[in-house]
Image 1 (cartoon, chains in turn blue, brown):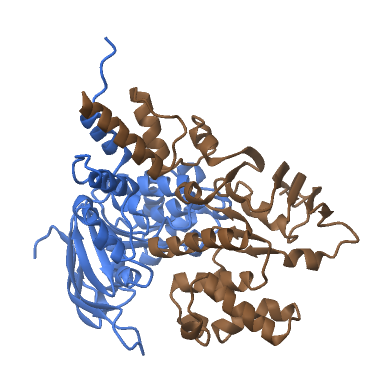
Image 2 (image 1 turned 90 degrees about the vertical axis):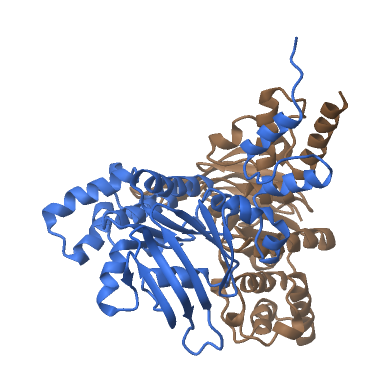
Length: 284
Length: 287
């Protein structure tokens, strides 16, 4: 197997007990080392089910998932899979177990039986990586939502994972909290090469990914770069999703005849295009 | 119905070492028919504020006047006043509990002691308001609904009380884009049809740009700004100084103005910006 592939899903289906139809059916994709993948999909589309499969919280009813080469369906692999693919959930208050930040970060290591003297430096460097080292001795309940999520990220980092899976990790945060958590994970992706699977309802977050997978009715229906995926606005809206605001504005302007280039996602890109098409007359 | 907040201060843990001033001398008046957006970062005091507006919390000092009557006054019928002010909490679907959607929505009116035919009328109307088809969903268990539908069923339970003022604490949090849009459309219709006064707490400045006629900005328990979205979004640095964003359209307007483009300073809606960008393009193409 290619060592560059971090996650490989082969023909994966999953049906909840007693459910009349599968939550995921015949899903096929791979994620390569260092990629930042966003997963979009409406409520109930199956994207959280997918996340839980990647971390062996659920096992495929059919097909196979390999995480760093380990088959999640084999019981002896479960701890290998979970150590390599760490997961952050939506609610910051549901994933903190200890009463002191550094103990919370050490929780996973304790479960793995890491010796105490090795634990300290790993916890410290994990907290530094998310810029929470100042709070090592604080009580988690006094932190903001964004800070709690960063502590959750540190707890995963201490395990030295290859992949971080975030299941709507910013949904309950305010704009500055959302920014700080996304920035933290993006910098881990860039600087440490950690592969990221980022599940979100925020199109502006997905626009920053290398690649987007869109899940609908348990299937992957669209896959591509943000520019490719958001270009087909009607398709995306049919899937109960939306496109970034600047992409929508650009499409409306193009309808009126303004020849803006395809693939505009951000305010900065829109401003550049306006400058190109409507050059300012110099003051002289 | 008007709501007047006068010098409202709320302190948690008064007399203990954990004493925290959550709200500090807040005053404003909401007139009938307004759509007021309440914004501020997590922990700024927004939720504490809205819980005062229907009497769930009592001010440490200051007053809440509903049509001139002190909500916490001694001789006031607080129950009657409260029924005129509906409060939708964060993640209200967690409070669904009945066997069927219709029974859940009927819970409030039933407690008000209304006759059965009136309860039935209200349940049907509330479901229509939130775009849940009565024939299809009334007899379903609320737990069979999708996340967005559950949220709307929970809001219907508050609408069935026919409040004159509706207060919602982050009604779109956690929903997908279609679910968010449905809630916002429903609020627009409610305001147009019933003239319900609406106060909404939200982190989404895009939602505020679409709906709010006025914004209250709360920062560290104080009222940091009170004005129209047009005024506040165009005031340089105001929103970022309290940890909030401005809508992308307002940001694009600011970026282009800084480069020297001739645009009004206070554009914040995509449709306004579209007109001005077309104008700039036509002017540039003309010469």
